[in-house]
Structures are given as C-alpha cells and as structure tokens.
Amino acid sequence: MDQQIVVLASGNAGKLKEFRRILAPLAMDIRSQAAFAVPAVAEDGLSFVENAIIKARAACQHTGLPAIADDSGLAVDYLQGAPGIHSARYAGGGDAANNTKLLAALEGVPEEQRSARFQCVLVYMRHALDPMPLVCQGSWEGRILFAAQGEQGFGYDPLFYVPEHDCSSAQLAPEEKNRISHRARASALLLQALASNR
Image (tube, rainbow, N blue to C red):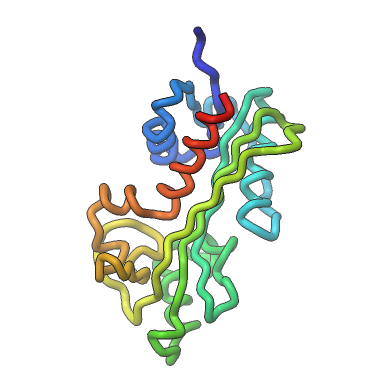
C-alpha cells in the first residue's frame, strides 16, 4: 500500500525532521511545502488556532494533499497573553531583541506574577474544505526569569524557567526539551488522533 503524502505547511527543515520522527508510526510520507513551491501566506488570524488553520488550508489548496501546520508562541499572564501570536516578531529584530523587549515589559514585576506558558497548536486538514480539521494543543507551564540563563534552544528559551527541572528551557538537554515541550505534547495528541482516525 502506498504511503499517504502529507504536506508540512513549513519550509523549516528542522520541523520536517521532527514531524517525520514523531509520526513515523503512521508510515506517512511527510514532505515540506517547499517541495511543492507553496507560497507564503499572511498569518493574519487572531489566535494560534486560526493561524495554523490558515497555513494548513493554503498548503491543501496549493497541493491538493492533506496538510499539517503548527503555530506556537509564548503567552505571559501579566502581559495579557503577549507576545502570543506575535512571539516571533515581538520586537521586529530576532531572538535577542524579543528577549530584551520582554524583560523590559516585565521590569519590576515580582516573581509570583511572571507566570507564562509556551503554547503549540497543530492542525491536520484532509483537504482545503475540511469542515472538521484535527486541532491538537499543547501547553508548557513556567515563568519568566529576570535574566537569560543557558545556551541551548532558541527564542525565549533562556528566559523561560521550567519549575520541574529548576532551570531555564535553554539549560535543558535538547532530548529532554523535545520530550516535555509544548510541541511534544501537541504532537503526541496529533499522533493519537491520526492513529484513531485511520
């Protein structure tokens, strides 16, 4: 039986490798949208769910194949969920600028009010008009540190304190981060949902 080709609505080679590993039990042929020259799409939704659906639908429309998309970011309670869907472009200048802006926004805020979580939403659409896409969401609870710690990871990892490990996300071994992160939790749910929908 031929493997089902599924488009990953991302050109990120690291994400492609990660999803191939996670969904290996389903024997899907997961390919990057770059292989199909899927054009970039405006992520103009107001939530992680909307943006993931926008990306998945665009990949489906362009290729005629099922698609998986993710949208993720950091939500800080004191900042009413910011940077949220704008996490990657919060300061408009990359990871270091984003971290500097976040620390400035929380200047003087005590530790007990610095609660935050990484959120990841994964969407699987069977086709562009799929009225019931699979939506899986994973959260990773923590809080924002007063200064960066650690050299691993990327994005807000040096500022994200992980209570159960008593360190920042950037101080975790990559294997451990990939086991407990928001993306890992959402991915486990997607694997389960796809396996039961076959």
